[in-house]
Every structure is written in C-alpha cells, then in structure tokens.
Image 1 (cartoon, rainbow, N blue to C red):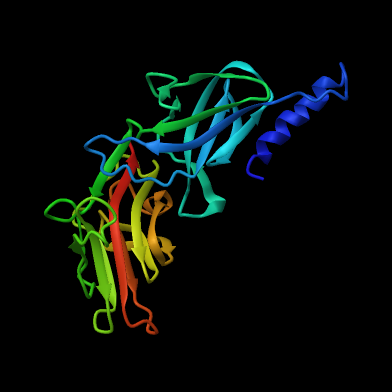
Image 2: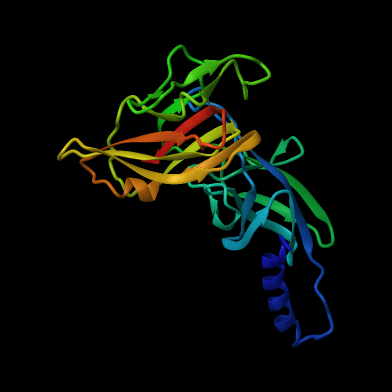
Amino acid sequence: MRNSLLIIVPIFFSLFSSCEKNQFNAETPSYLHISGIDLQVNSTQGSDSQKITDAWVTMDGTFLGAFELPCTVPILADGAHEFSIYAGIKANGISATRIRYPFYDKCKLFQGTDSLSSSFANQTITLYKDSTININGTTVYKENTGFIFIENFEDAGVILEASTDSDTILSKINTDSLVFEGYGSGVIALDTVHDFFEIMNTEFISFGSIYNQTLLELDYKCDHSFKIGVVVKSAETGSINRYESLHIDSTSVWNKIYVHMTNQVNLGSSEDEFGIFIGMQKRQDVENATFYFDNIKWLHEE
C-alpha cells in the first residue's frame, strides 16, 4: 500500500492518454528504489542521530508523493529526469502526522558510493523502462536552522536543570550498557519518596519571530511515560506558564522523537521569553521509574 499514492496518478494518466492509440496497451514503468536517508552533521550540530522514515519525491518539478523507507517507486517515464528528494519524519512520533522535516535540506543522492551531484541540489537520474535504479540519500540541516541549545551530556555541565518543584535532579551516567552513544547520557530516577521530576533549560531565550517552526529532537528510553512542553515567561508580569506539547509513552529501547512546539510557542508573544520543560508525576501504582535522555536539540527556524 505504501506506493499506492504514486501508482494511481500515473496509471490514471496513462489510461486516458493511451486511448487514442490503443486502449489495450499498458505502459511499462521504470523503478526508483530508495534504500534510506542518512543525516550528516558538522562539529557544531551535535549527534547525527535521526529517525527519517519517509522520502518526499519530486521529479521535474512535479511532486510524486511521500513514501515510507525503504521504498520502490514506479514511474511512467524513462530517460534523464531531474529529482529532488527530502527527508520525512513522524511529527510527535505519530504515523498520521508525517511531515517533510522543515530543518533538513534537500538530499544529496548516491548510487552505491558514487554521488550524483557535488551539492545538495536537484540531481539528474536516468531511468530505464522495466529496470530499477538503486539510490540512497544524505541530508544536512538547513542553513537557517537555529540551534537554541544542544544537550548531548558529553560536557562537564548540563543545560537542563531541576526546577524548584522537582523532587530529584538530572544526573549524567557513563555506563556503556546504559549510554545511548558517546560517553554519557542523562538519567532521572523516581521512587516512593521522590515521585516528581521537572527539568528546564537554565536560561530563557527570545525569538525573532514566534510564528516560525520550532521543534525539539530527543533520544529517550524510559519505563514510565513523561510530558514535554514549552515554558513561557511573561515580559509583562514575569509569571511563568507551562504549555504541554506531548505526552510520551514508555519504551524499553532507545527511541528518537521530533516534538512539534510551534503551537505552544505561539501562545506567548514576541516580547516574552521561552524555555522547555520535561517532567512527570509518578503513578501511585509504580514503585520506581527511570528515564534516560540523550541528544536533546531545540531548533528554531531563523
């Protein structure tokens, strides 16, 4: 079913265009197989951890569809054509909210180890009827991506600290079997005495435009659900309000999530200051709960 969107349009067009010649002729498609899309980062952009699930494919300026990776795309064309492919993700980890990730640039495409272009631009691929062209892609963060903060738990200090309401603190661990990658990850432990945690960034920030895209990237593993959202500090009164973005379920394995925060930031004003919070009140039927975090990136479109 994953390729049905693409198949319907070409076949519908083919049936009508071929009626004048021979209504029984069926055009033979070419195939483009996309094995996956990787993320390439520089030294200032943190980890290359990603959860790219989809390829958004355009040929000669016409959008062909979004396809779950890996995918084989049938195309009723052959010869040389110009392609642009973008990385897609599940916003808030929900399959029904698949989007083209606004902070990833157009993919550089490869056939094996051979690059089809020296830049992240439209690239020409030659298609052959009844044959499959195998490619993979690499994307980078767009130049207008603002990294508000990156917390990868590799440095001496941490950007996120316990709020005054929190029963416990965010600690760093370096046990190989518990760390997601690198030398460290963050951990929070709750028990019957310490049953609530909340961490926030230590410095609030201002946005040039509160209406631009704002998302939080996060690697996590936990045996209890938790909440994540936006903190708004009023410029007029100094009061602090919390607006929940997402309630995240437990997972026994490390998972990557992209949390959309634009709507919550929009609840403030351009004069206000902003932060993020992660927190949870432990359920009474649970004695202990442990939360692991890594590669927390707060991004804003500049």
